[in-house]
Length: 393
Image 1 (cartoon, rainbow, N blue to C red):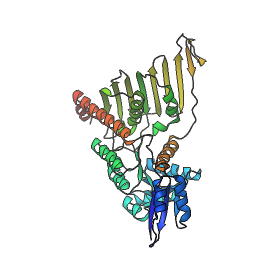
Image 2 (cartoon, rainbow, N blue to C red):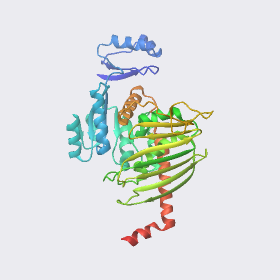
Image 3 (cartoon, rainbow, N blue to C red):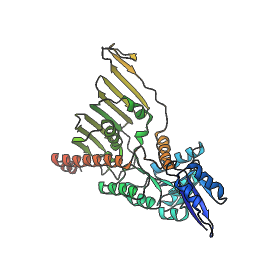
């Protein structure tokens, strides 16, 4: 006895059939298939009592690979979505640290595995997975998953190098898998409410400051924190980068912990970024100017403020101290960005559609981040930062 799947290319409805040893596909069935009709497919289900339809409401079986801080949060949200009625079921978590995997599995009611291979051997039905292992393992993990037919969401940065990012993009294409880059701020409600306001942004000022924690110290602050804002600004400006100037310093780790960057785009837009993981406070704000308008986005508070000047010197909205300037506060529906991100990913998996943040976008942000890291290195050599650091030791 064997199984086969028939899928309607128009509706995406798939039906799994059990084929008995003497089962024959008759000409009438072939004709029905060639018609690509949902109704014909439903008819086929009815004529085979052993068949089971992969209806759109069947739960998507998911896993999380790597359950450190980020991975545990993905497991938590998958479980919360399941409890809220989303058609998803968390099957297992994978981590080389089995104690950690066991703890997360117990917390969220799923299986623990020490490797992707072990999980796929016993649970080949898994359809989607978050890759939240250390960045250097993203390619290895995602490759094995996609080869096994599993759709993937790969945490940022998507890879350790552009060559690895290119291989990930190629793997997704070769195996026809949904592959989403994990750029969380794209799903921040404040960011989503800002997109309709965009006209011609010409100047950005971005701050992302965080208190020191002993996580993600294998990468510079540019790849750890600033990459979020690089992705957002690249999406907002939609223009190639013309010039990169950057400075950064290691403070409490062996990598750059604080950085300041100035980008100039072909469009003439200029963007200043400051990122720090050694701050005494947590700040996540993006501000930009465009003709007759200033927009302030607070990622953390999920708020947007718009300061506008009307064509005739007046503007709609609340009066400010200056009567020529009016203030608007666009409506923002509060939601945890990770909830929105995973729901979007699951939708792409179910529909087998392009994700909101494709791997190409992840590669674009990674390329710019690596250019910035290189510029920081060049600046450090130019001013002799390494010699200064040694003299203090």
